[in-house]
Amino acid sequence: MKMWKRNLIVCWFGMFVTGIGMSQIAPVLPLYIQHLGVQDTASITQLSGIAFGITFIISAIFSPIWGHAADKFGRKPMLLRASLGMSIVIGCMGFAQNVYVLIGLRLLQGAITGYGTACTTLIATQTDKEHAGFALGTLSTSNIAGSLLGPVIGGYIGEKFGLQNVFFITGSLMMVAFITTALFVKESFTREDKKTLSMREVWNTVPEKSLTITMFVTFFILTVALYTVEPIVTVYVNQLSNNTSHVALIAGMAFSASGLANIIAAPNLGKLSDKIGAQKVMLGALVAAGIIFIPQAFVKNPWQLVGLRFLLGLTMAGLIPSVNILIKKITPDSLTGRVFGFNMSAGYLGVFGGSVLGGQVAAWFGIRYVLFITSALLLINAVWVYFKVYKKLSLN
View (cartoon, rainbow, N blue to C red):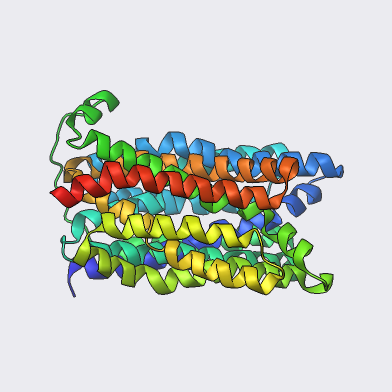
């Protein structure tokens, strides 16, 4: 088996396990904060927001640093660092004595993350151009699949075995990712630049600056669009439901529908990118995603929402892999880690910004306006991509 194929399998498994581990913590955070002695509902909500968001803000700062380290020392050492570090830190959360220790550990978690970035960089630099779309599209399904299962697993473990065990089991899953990476990932790494470049020097050596900025902004908008709806899906399902006893189950299906569609479509859209160009797939997917958000504001029952969320997942499958493919295409191998690190920073900021934006717009104007604003963001981005990416690359 070719090296890139074997590494793709191992990295897929590692990111899948990481996705399960990271996402199963989110639904139990408020309950765990209550378990740690905070009883006031407003305080629980406030501290949960801080504990959730601080990881992504810190990750945005450290992602380019670890990207630089990946270019300097190799991608496999970054995989090992991130998986072992997260295993230890998340496991320690189960021993937290108060909420401030928990928040401190969540901050530390943000500083040492980077497994997904290192995986993406490794696969992007090892895979030949003919198979890059397929490889990166397939890799993108791993974290989504893990994130689908994570909340269900976390909720079940928390209910049956206690909240602390969620953190212990998550830490154990990360240790499994560390061991499989250590044993099976192979990397033939040759450092091309012996001199440590500053951020400005790195930027000066990026050949396609305008295109690279467009990719960063597009990735930011995509993650904002994905996460504006995350905090409000359950509330929206509750509004649409006559029977309130199954709200959690139907909301789970609404979350899962888009993820399932993403898993189905991403490898095929990746192959299509290899044939016709990632810029064409990206533009089409942006327009389709922007349009699909609009009817979600007018659904009459939860099942219509589930169906539209499935269609949305099909379009989203053509977006993030396309960004990664285009970044790989326009970035020299010696800078790939740094540039992917900057891109992940944009993504982490998008997660934080999207969650805050969705919650605030829903609180002030109503849930339907969240869907309208998200649609507008994607369609405006599509116009920008058409002029800045599609026309430029199609001419080439």
